[in-house]
Image (cartoon, rainbow, N blue to C red; front, side):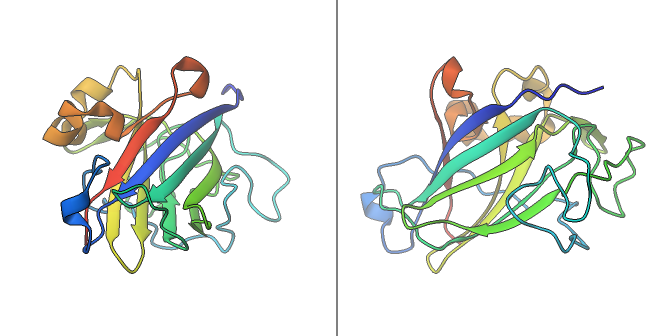
Length: 205
């Protein structure tokens, strides 16, 4: 049985606009591939609450978290109306994807994917569950959440990770990116009551 404690994860997303490279002041989030489990057949319900599916009476199993962030240019200006897609494994480490061979069970009440837009201040938020780790051909993946963010200035595909996870040090993708090793705050999400916000910055398309 999973816990159902709610936590808030604070993020700041700084994007590198094509016209503002020289004035960059905020750190830039490493660009990543979309990954093998980008949703092939998203559910019709893809709102910002991943913990419930329209028409279902149940709620997703796992630790419920709220991911809160902003999409910013390097000079701190908000990026309005950026298209944001979010997808992840469920609390057991299973994706709602036909190619996921992980024997962990699907959660019938977990949406797994959201599509939204940043607000006037660049802000966004989603309600979800903390994803589980899972086996992959390259090794065990630590808990993470996928993001793809698109605007007129840039396209960014990246992942967020959670500070304090024992598997972070051994995750093959996380360990392979020098920007993350040098500045873990670029990708590590923190609970506000444990030490403030994390930075989440992006590369240009």
